[in-house]
Image (tube, rainbow, N blue to C red; front, side, top):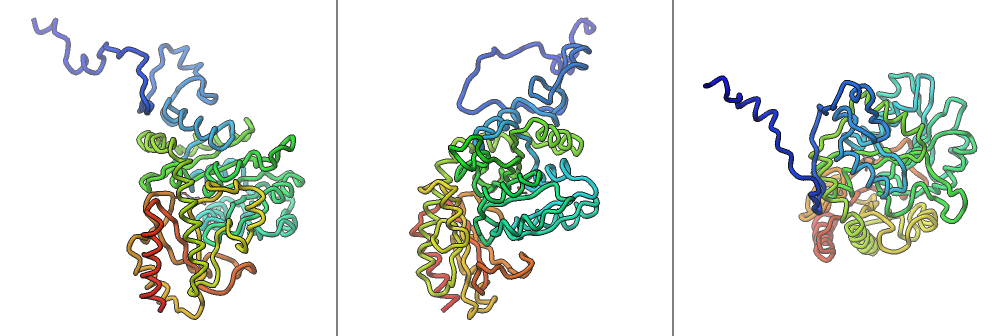
Length: 406
Ligand SMILES: *Cc1c(COP(=O)(O)O)cnc(C)c1O
């Protein structure tokens, strides 16, 4: 008797039921896999994952990761995308795909700090050298390129100090010298300007070779997930990144992909709201005597404002929700720290792009190789504007200023 009953474990593992095809709903299904099944040995040997025509292993892609990759390509105007477990991992993926011992990479002096640290410690130990250039001076970039230079990083605007570079001019310098360009496009998010269409209307339009984003920021929009992307329009460059990605094992968690797929449809609305609020608060900060300079590329007089104006959408959605202030040097660092501590709605925390406004006081000495000429002396504080009511944020800034910087 018992021998004719199916074993319950086997029956549950090899259950024959298949749900009918054709299910459709606002959110796409989430496919989880390390192992992927093949119908035959022949299929196992032949299946090609590199061009998204099939599946071989979770690390190489699932329907869920392919979907996010394709949507991000649409966002940024690219053709191919590789996802990594964080923005910094995407930067590392690209660097290790392109650079070999003896090569040199150039990095803007106002680049995202951990990106500089990657070059200074990890890349250096692989025999890859780096140099910092002044992103506001294309001549300085041209003079910094050596026969060993293979890759130039671009960032618009710079982290913390928010100087907006003349991206088309920098890309032209690199193209004239046959050097790859990689843009950290986390701030622009594919919305403020198009990284593969920097000179709209000209044919062909000027484009960077790579656009990298920390999806951790606006695509996530929640402050609750880390991910990064490398987007290209050149199949050979894409394949270099894809193969290094596979060899380094930089797989992403599908639950995290799902989180970003959930947020992506609202990115344009959120980005516009962050932008409008940040511009209003930045202008308000300009009226405060505690601040000697407000660093926001959409404000006239901010470093690189003309470059911002010629590249980015003029109206709402042409800038991210970030700005920095230079606090008058008559205030001590302890007073500036007290101002940050005194804020109630603004939380102390790194990263940005979520609903909660954030503040970080930075030490310029550790950020830059020298004091940038475009910046007045002072102590720098960066704000990331969330989605709270602007009037409430203004009141919060005012009470903290009045109590800590009186
Ligand atoms: C946050 C950020 C990164 C890194 O993203 P993570 O996901 O935190 O690793 C890279 N570049 C810029 C400009 C960023 O703001």
